[in-house]
Image 1: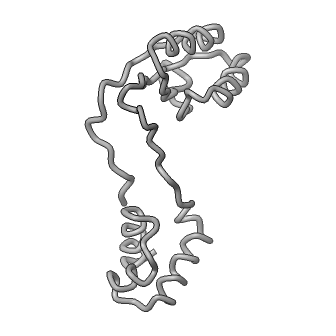
Image 2: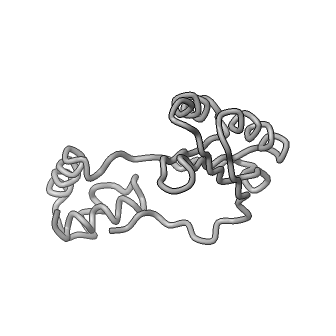
Length: 142
């Protein structure tokens, strides 16, 4: 990957719908050359996909939290199945340290968060932090 590839990726990270013609103007290449580079970056797995970041219309009123979860090996698959089927679970990471997993959740209310915690706590111990606001939110850079 060279500097032109990095510039193309940076432009796509800002706007994944940017037309190839506009990207070509920014990097001083022809449109076919940019298209070829994008296809190569996709086939190499450097570009893993394009996405829409959906924001719930009432997101500011929702309760978001990080739940650290410690489950034993016998409960791991059951916990992962619970995380998969619960729509409140936005992301779930396997981590090192005192807990096995950290789940980011978005619930409609504190009561909904409490009900979710009750289900998770049947499988292991938890530690929960409610997210007050997002102080920094930026895309991955390279």
